[in-house]
Length: 140
Image (cartoon, rainbow, N blue to C red; front, side, top):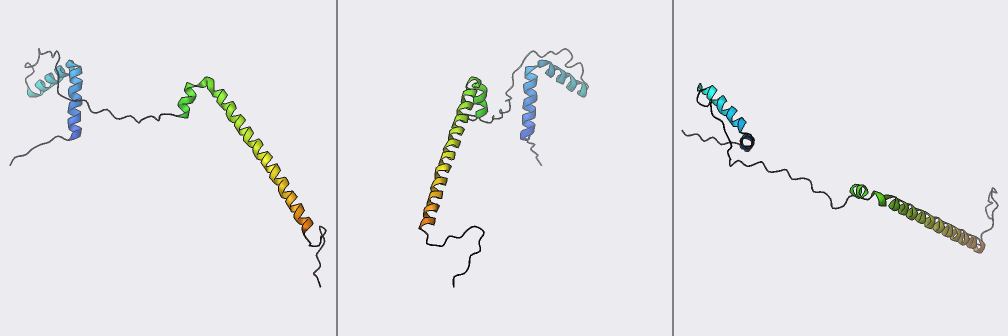
């Protein structure tokens, strides 16, 4: 019976990361070699070994993709244009006031038109005028 052992992606990434760390700092490799020799009972084997530098074929894990920034954002614009901010705020206030004035004028014109139309309709109406508070009497 033959067995084949395959490393998982996490194990491969862990080994690659350790190799890259050892590549960056050769003292780690010396310590690892001495620890391995101590486990094997051969302390004298790597006693005087000093690793200078070496290269591995290990690859760094892929960098996580950063969230793409929006091309335009209000917060970024405010931070970059603090000198223009007051100008923009005053403009928006003026636009809001102009809108309120327009609505007030429109309401006044329409209210007057409705009242005039109702008054004309009352004049044209042939219905008898009833005083406020009086009870209407049924026609006989």
